[in-house]
Length: 182
Image 1 (cartoon, rainbow, N blue to C red):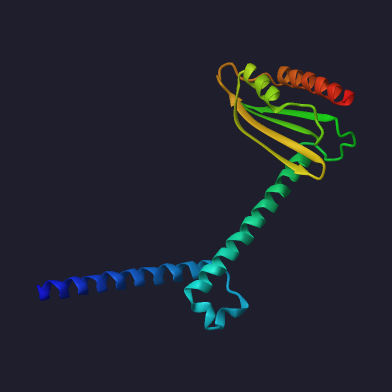
Image 2 (cartoon, helix red, strand yellow):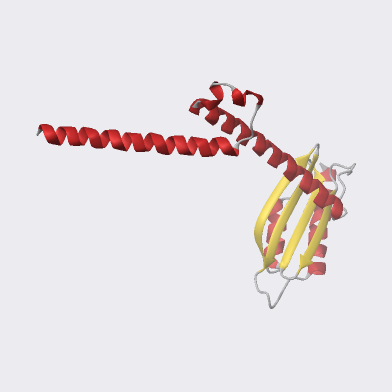
């Protein structure tokens, strides 16, 4: 019985030692992924807590950069598409439809006080044979931009850019008129 207890204790020690070695290796790997700071020569820089805090800080910093770059990319895409964020009338809504092969992008740009309902836009797209893949929006100041990516339900039928744009512009005209009345 005594021999079994010693073997069990020795096995637990071995398991714990292996766990610590694994954690040490993982922390070392994590430490190599984060940029070195001014305090990297200090004793504190070697502690697991310090490494985890630095990694957390670095990840948060990267997330902020990603958000900033996404906003910048969206602004550049809008400029490339000829859409400018200088709408002076908060009730005015601009529409841009681009179809390439079976993929369609719809961009709606308006003031925050718009009268357009996004579900109406999606309904028109679905009636015209498009399936919405992704819809996103972002705001810059008092302007909002909706970006709707869709594709043709049937590649044989395709999408009629002109007809879809006309229907969306009619919807926008009605929304513009109703928001001016308010």
